[in-house]
Length: 145
Image (cartoon, rainbow, N blue to C red; front, side, top):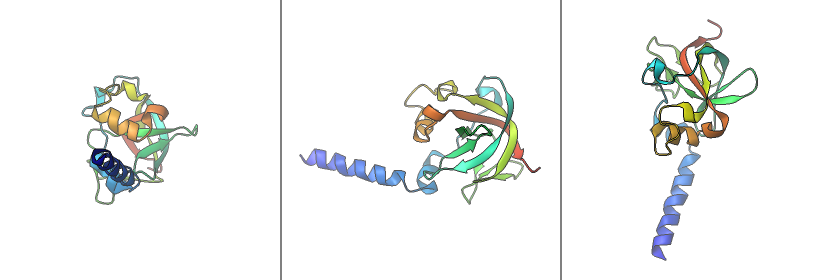
């Protein structure tokens, strides 16, 4: 019986941590490609508005109204404010309109995206990318220049 209580307490703590916002999500880091051609799908212009969900996941709301989890370019890093910063110093966060080049794919098209134990699959499932899909960004800038 004690074993079940201990498991229940651990599960409760895990669920409580899921709603804690950016700090809880930050343990995954910034989901990014290791190299641009890592995801082999066709590239196309990608435009939208960054939406940071309540769980800290960064999504891209497309002009069609679709929302997809963002996988960033290889040079992306987590900034001190929680925004994503590229090597050129550009910062991207909630509400930013972007334009760029990338691929709109399913979670399974990412490296090991179909392996439930992989980084992309675990992080993507946490951010509902298994249902919503993924916006893989190779290059981006703020839509206003």
